[in-house]
Length: 272
Ligand code: KIV
Image 1 (cartoon, rainbow, N blue to C red):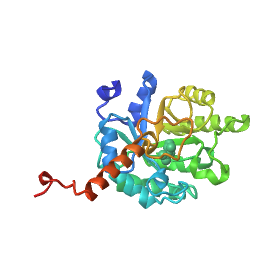
Image 2 (image 1 turned 90 degrees about the vertical axis):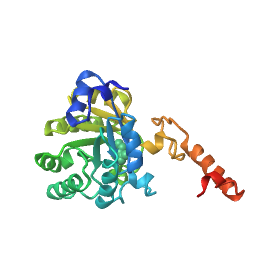
Image 3 (image 1 turned 45 degrees about the vertical axis):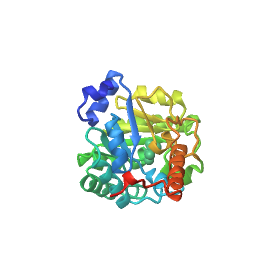
């Protein structure tokens, strides 16, 4: 059992800040449904992210843009029913917080009330400052997300590493300080140079959780379907696969098919 599993009965936003102070790394994974959430929570993962990556891995869209607030609430409520200990953070989807702070707050309130999630995550820095402030003022914990922000993919035009140039790196550093100052409890840093991510993590007191951001940050997040090897077509350098479920599942489906067609299944013991 990990130190955190022994020490924290339930993970809260404060536990994460304490973990950073104590030098204990934070483990975060995505989940979008009850069964997966129950397994991830049972394994002792600190934070479950109901990511808008559900748009890709659950719904098969090319980007995260199409997923709606109602769909995010459905996924988040299913995850919450499966957990006992993990902190559940829910992505505010594209279009639910960018146009004005009042709408951002309404969207965050719907997530908290209708799903039972514990916090929300928003992509961006200075541009969405007023929305973050309004959500925080209502008592809703906010996780920030800087670097590669997939909801802006059509602005970037590519999923390659962000903030390699000085100007973008400076903006990222000032956005990180701003998120801390506003009162965010943590932030995700996606696909930025490891040296920059380490610098950002050392400049703020709140946890910085990286994905493709090296090992100098305070924790790591991966998309569960990717780390389980269910998504074969997605191969970024930062992804470590812990299983090849694509192959395992394919073999299981083939065995089942063979058993059905050969009348081996169900056997005498498998019927009433
Ligand atoms: O939606 C998501 O899964 C995310 C992670 C990649 C951080 O935002």
